[in-house]
Image (cartoon, rainbow, N blue to C red; front, side, top):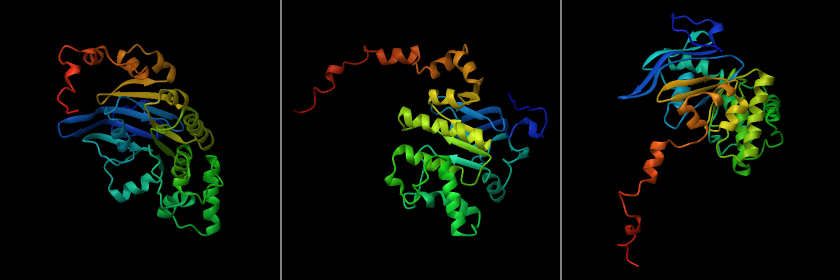
Length: 283
């Protein structure tokens, strides 16, 4: 497993394709990330789990340069990126694909138009024929070839997610960020997305970072699972390691169990009389 060293200010390609070194992020007095050291190994899938509000999304935004750390450093392929200007960051971001939780397809564009959108933003496509071929290949990879002229409103939730994934790989990125990739999908459609994530890693050697609450998905796709809690990494290892770790906070999360303290509050009855809630409402 690749670890982020903090012994010097340089990163080699062997340290990881993405490295966060002592990254801290404050919003006012609120510390969201607290001295995070993390190195993402090339060609592997790293899954980030943790309760809502623990800093998962903030962490991902630092990886792609949408946020800059209050202190610490972020590296991509050995190059520090947290100190780059927006034009320089734009050249870095073309190496990343992003699958949004909602899919975030443009309703006014066809499936083909959605996939071409990022390509046309960064490159000049020589011909319509080549554009059609690019779209066809990307859709074939997610099993959606033939849907080019459909609009998002004409697709099911699972189909929209697959088209969004085709758009995420439109620029042939080296890294894909998955933001809750199975949210809103039934178990079968969720597994389709899991299989596609595995397929892209296998066939394209893509590095993946996935943020999820879906532990079934996490166990299936992850080479490594990292858990955040209160801005810190409290567990880091394989799926088997996370599943068996002797840490009550981790076990509570992965098994979906409420804490005894929270359960006691929910069960408390002495402080109110529920039968009086409706007595003053006119009938």
